[in-house]
Length: 327
Ligand code: ATP
Ligand code: LTN
Image 1 (cartoon, helix red, strand yellow):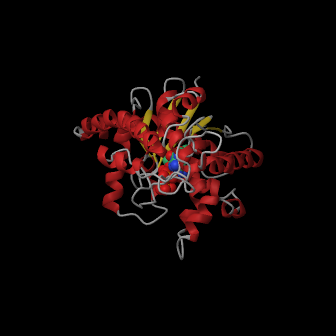
Image 2 (spheres, rainbow, N blue to C red; image 1 turned 90 degrees about the horizontal axis):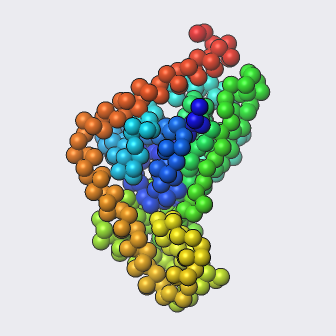
Image 3 (cartoon, rainbow, N blue to C red; image 1 turned 120 degrees about the horizontal axis):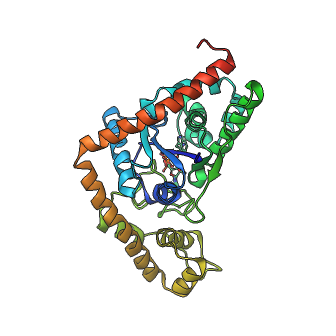
């Protein structure tokens, strides 16, 4: 049997090139090698306040972006988290074996809760729901960007704790990070991770941004005080631009050095912009085709949920039995 892969994205904000290079591009690459489930994690998106109409529209948009990126629904299951209630059921059972201290240590919890006066309990429970997503399907591999590595460690800890309390139940999953592009930084501030929830102009390149805007954002990206590329001394802004180019082009380190050493920053930015646009333009064309047939997308999501629900339900049944719940 093929190893199962599970990953997901929140339908909050606009998907950007960080999401693509850190996660989606890898999903496309490995989809034929594993049994893949790609989820739109709408229940994670309600851990912070959301406009309901916007959330509903974003769920469909993310599904269309998965397809536009090249995820093949004949080969993979594409599904919406809330369409399979077992995610919420297992999350509760896992909550009951997860020490609060583990959750309070999560970096994302600390930053998200620091930004608000008071946060819903969902922000704290967020990684438990994520653990449930993964463990429900006994996934062996979880391809994500670097910012999710800590949540995956927690998933492993929860799986191991459950296994030792109630007997071997869950596969303990591994993390899969891309070699290049695991952490794309903001173009306005290379000290911050490019993030959907940061809406500052010049911060991110959204996958659906118009080409002119993409060019402008890259040309205005923060670099450093050197005039030209020197791999030994390049600052984080320049390294970020180089990573973006390398991740899109799949160039080797040697090819990168040969091509860019000594190049002035203005010319580097032009090359990066053209590389990004050459990938994003056909992507946007496919996206427009996909959303012009809403019935097709609805069918893909329905099929995906129908395919995975029996796996999820059978895990929940085993967990209930092990914990002594009424089955
Ligand atoms: P938010 O700001 O709303 O938390 P986000 O931009 O961090 O959103 P997520 O939905 O949390 O996006 O992430 C989806 C996937 O994209 C995850 O696998 C995550 O690791 C990856 N990812 C997110 N940001 C980046 C980034 N800047 N570089 C590489 N991968 C990223
Ligand atoms: N927390 C993840 C999204 C997510 C996820 C998952 C990723 C929710 N459940 C399961 C991998 C596997 C994020 O990217 N913010």
